[in-house]
Image (cartoon, rainbow, N blue to C red; front, side, top):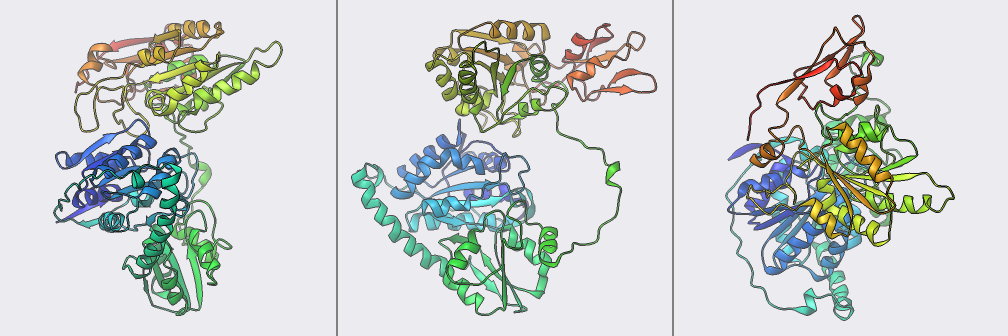
Length: 599
């Protein structure tokens, strides 16, 4: 059976066909759709969203030790969070096969960096696979589980944005059921006290020798001889890019298994060509190892060390030219920076906090990061998931050291990010007697990555009703005494609550609770929020004076008509959040109810 699949869909299919029993992840572009598609195989695979990537990996490690084939998936920065258990599991090895999928982001389309996670495989001394097509994404995953079990190793499965989201024809086959292996108590293998770990450390080196032999003999690493003047060594999508540029005018060493590197096979290929280019994205991972082995090659001395290695980038770097394109006046292109959606429940909060002076706002990873942009200009830092509250605490502690300090710090993060690592950060504030203000923007879903469930939504990934974590109760359990739960669309309430928090000298938490405007509402949402977004705002042009104050709310549904000198509201975008009507000095904006569907 052949199907058109994205790389992420193909990986999920590979997990199904390989007999995976248990999978866990934390959503993050470009990896999100992997587990979402794994979840469709309910009955064969238990798929779960974890609170963060470390927990996801630890859960599948437990499943592997118990004897099942397991898989975790995450974006590249998620591996940073999961690195602690990864490096230890590299010592102990597996029972059931375990594959960790790292979705890297050359070009940083939606990430804070573009780190090259191939280095993790080398650092941890584990096997590394790099598929280049949707078909390979499926097939190599099945091979990865075989390698994991045969060589007693976790496997790092590295993909990139273009593979994750590009589509290709995939030949699908039936699932092969792989039984759950017996669990046998073995502290010497699974319990890493120093006495055991020292012995395991030696076994890691023996394993790498065996994997080196596999790397030099597997069909995943092969070469294709065409014109011998130029040889290309590449892995993953870079192989596809290179073939588009060079075609039959070059020979190719295609690497699918890259740690350990198949150096003997690469040397064999090098002996057959005159000049070698190593084409890879980000770090010179392949190039450095080839040069260390005495193989003369050209890589990052002509190719960039950042961004995607697209065909145009390769052409320009090597040949000094690109393909001809249609000429156009780039000054006529209207920039369209990302912004909060019409009706976004974060708008009211950022509108009010952005007007405050002597405030540092420490932000986090999520839709609300857009609060940094005009017209709000209401975010000063973003580091990583969960860092807002702890970064804010540290900044406030330093500001407090100054005499006559008038700077206050407000840490801002979302509900899913709070569950991810924000709880730990809040504990740091409370334990160390901080006085920073912490704000949890609870929009009832994991918004930025496409509306995944989390511990606060009441549903699991596979649609089962579950316990809903009460954020306010959790905050109280952390020791916070000053908590307010507010409607962020009510500007008066937001302002008064900020005034309250700024006067306190102890830790405080503000929870803004309103569902994401794009969310498919549950029955609980309909009941709690009184069937939200069932109205539209409109402008009375007779009363509008064209002051544009409503446009300072940053709502994309509002526009200014220069000729008439009045504002208009696009009814196709407006959902009646009423933020604009509250700021209008002439009460020229009113609200009319309309109907809206329910889940």
